[in-house]
Length: 392
Ligand code: ADP
Ligand code: MG
Image 1 (tube, helix red, strand yellow):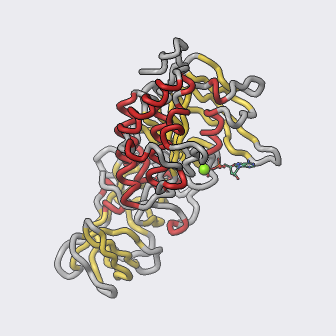
Image 2: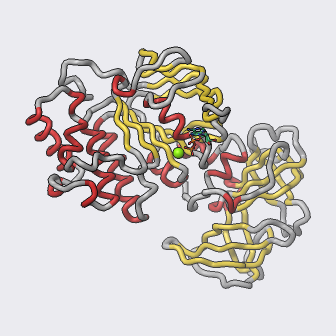
Image 3: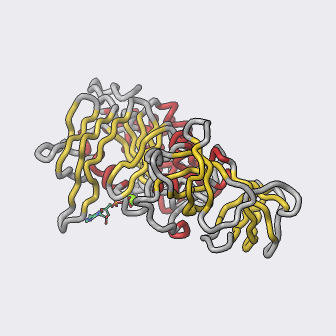
């Protein structure tokens, strides 16, 4: 890893966040006893809805915000406690923000060269170093432009180049793709992943977009109310969400009150009946932590768990009515009403069923997640940034 050009050793990049609480003047709690470790070279993504504390955490890591209690260490150096605060410029990190935050009065090359100042290089070396990094992000030809003469995507590439140029051990990203259109988001996401991993830097990246989080992360941490609910590989978060909130925020078609009929022999599996719903045959699901002694439960269903079929031809668990169908590149996404229950959304099928059609629904046990009823708020799926269905 770079950074030693000036002869000054960079702070090792592994992060330890220990029971950090941030209370803003006025009493708002930005972070609540937040603990997390990040390994050197890891790409960690923090996922949570608006107001969950993502930006607060990033600003505390960067040193822009002070912590109220708890400890943050970068490598073996303590950088933040309630009484100790290392300023941002001494933390050896780069940042990429949602709104790019480039210097408007500097050209593209000088913006990137600014990122090299901390390496103690002479002006000429900075300018040629900036040229190298700009080539890596494909912007060499724009080096003389000012930020106002660039598109949003180009500006964000410059910000990325500036962060990479510093060769810091740690790069922090605050929703860097949220202001870009879909096609560009996808391309820049891949570039960020490629260039950051190639640089060897540790990355902490925050977003409210589940698909983006899963695509980028070595590990994902899910936040709610300033707390870390769960951290793990995307596959683990998706397959074994710790709480209904995590399940919901990582993509559900719907959730229903249900009753356990039988604990079947396969470990962790149970036969369930959705409450007040005529079922052609009982469905199965996986029991999440805490359901061992429950009878009344909630079944949370991943979109990938549902297969649609003609109700009069194939075997299925329940029948429903198609209320909406939307073309997607991978097939057709259906919204389906089950009698007396909240609507199922995001149900993908390779061909289309029409509005008003009666369809059969089959639920795969692997992706039907059984949670205890207690603490389960009523389903408000539509209000959340539940992103696209992600096949795992
Ligand atoms: P996110 O980035 O996940 O949307 P934030 O970290 O911005 O969340 O906010 C977390 C909580 O802290 C919210 O309740 C928010 O209202 C509060 N908060 C954030 N910044 C401030 C501030 N400067 N002053 C007071 N409250 C704040
Ligand atoms: Mg934010």
